[in-house]
Length: 627
Image (spheres, rainbow, N blue to C red):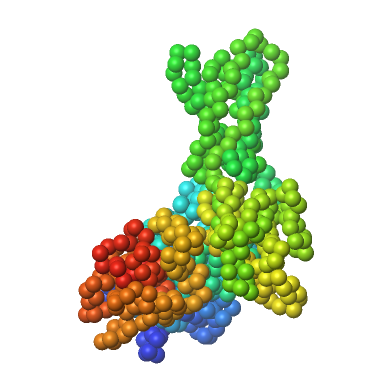
């Protein structure tokens, strides 16, 4: 008779407790919000040898991992009581309950051999498609960070796992959008701003939402990372895709590793018209594309609205294939027909199809109707040109923007005259180029006296890219002698949508022409990396810090007979300049720097925008926008 397997628990303080694997009864405590890191080893009870490739799972949390060659495994779980399931072909299936307190937990699990019949689950767990191995999927999963869905997980998910990130946020992130936003700064490595989960498909970012149209049978693996920068080897992959390694990321690997026979089995085959008897059928075919970019939309749903002579309406649906093509083969030519397409929850416009009322013909001639769905939206570029040596705006600089594939060689001073979107900077060095198709663009900025700068910038769907250009008449250093980041003269940053909604960027643009205020953008806050908000605010020329009673407050030197500036938090007045309450603390008590998205500083009342002109603001105001 085999001895009972045991579990050894070693908390962070080093205490050791032996727990029986069978019949263990522990007090069931409420699940805490703080995660617990569990590092464990699975050993043979008799020999003490490590057991590799065993499945360690917590079914209630839908997480699992495999032990490595040392029998080690790693999991991150919420604090509380959890039921572990252990599976191995030579040791059977065992379960145990383990109490996971806050902090770090070390487990040593010893099990007796108990061979079991080989089950499909065991075989599938061991099967690792070469494509996923090549991209490092299993290597990253072994580190225990993030959530991983291999082909077997996806197969068990069934049809509902037809992935858009909206679906993924419900099924995988298991948190609503508001909760996700609260996590962004905590997981962002010191202030990176994230709009939501980044989507990367086979190493390329998904700009226009194609992920929402991927059927589950095309998925080979899915990775979900709340803190990608902490996963070894993942950061270069995310940066190569043009995304931020400090933002939550969903990485999708499609089933490129399928054999030709498997691909043929799973592909959508368009219908073919049947034999004609009384009347040739109406055949309608075409493609479904994105209205703006022209990208073909695979597996889009196409609906035909059929209106009968009596006025009754019915519908008929088909699905576009992986190349975005569709076909209806058996519509009645005597009916009025209109068709439209849906993709990723968005719908295109109706396209009428003229019915044929002629007599029977021997041949069926397809009617072509190409459909579009508005997936992508225009992007915009807004920027400012500075003279690097004089630190002044450059008016009259020539700006040319061209699609990256039509861009000039790096040594060229400007693209061809007919290419791109030419414009010039105004008297304040400002320029704007609206209504661009999402994609990568080559930006070339030149001025006869200030020099030239060129770089490739990304333009995202439905958002504005802020560009700061620094011109220097001196030639840039040789690329081989410095790091790629050295000598960079063009910095492009995507505008944060919330700051756009509250008017932050409009006020900053107005300030550039009138000198009304000082603005700390997300990028500048991240670059300065302050430990306190007052450390950041004292970067403003004309603002000083006073710290009576161990509570610091910023004071404007530009406003006469003033000692208190008003403070707004997310548009609401929280510190009255006329009656500063030292008992309630100072600016540093409102928020930590990593919780702040942007700051506006107005040193005098005459420079205040209309939305920040309370009676208390004669000494100026500080406006803080949280993340």
